[in-house]
Length: 166
Image (cartoon, rainbow, N blue to C red; front, side, top):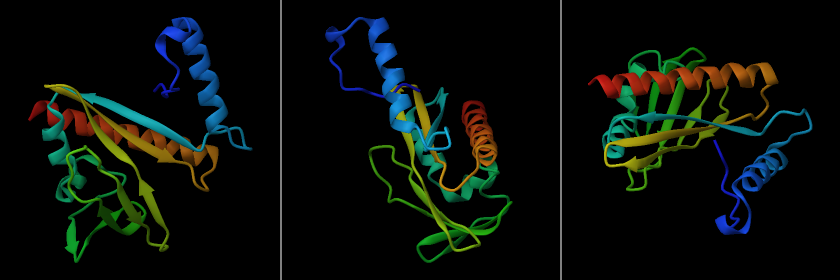
């Protein structure tokens, strides 16, 4: 996914702009281990953004599409949702419902560690949207980060499949 550099479109040629964006992206995400601090995973869904947002923001739907997070029934616990995951029992807190497609949520792991997962549902037109999940490396090794990215990509593909066939 391209990052916005803020460079006016008429300031450079398209080829120069792409090269500059690649250079800026590489500079902004490099870590001492040679990996990146975060990775944006996305999927285009052939449904209006609001329908996708409403489905994905309902924690009770998580077991249907987010297998890496919710493997069983989701239960409401005061201001959070609890569920069994492959990691054990986790708590999930979503940001309040909003008109901007923000689905950020914090997952509290069985260890007590909390992880913020930024997610956006972005309208492309009246009938299509893009869901973007920002995966953060944290203390993960390169292999763990790659595995987590693959799991998130599978979850996003499952979300797309469910919403495009319903």
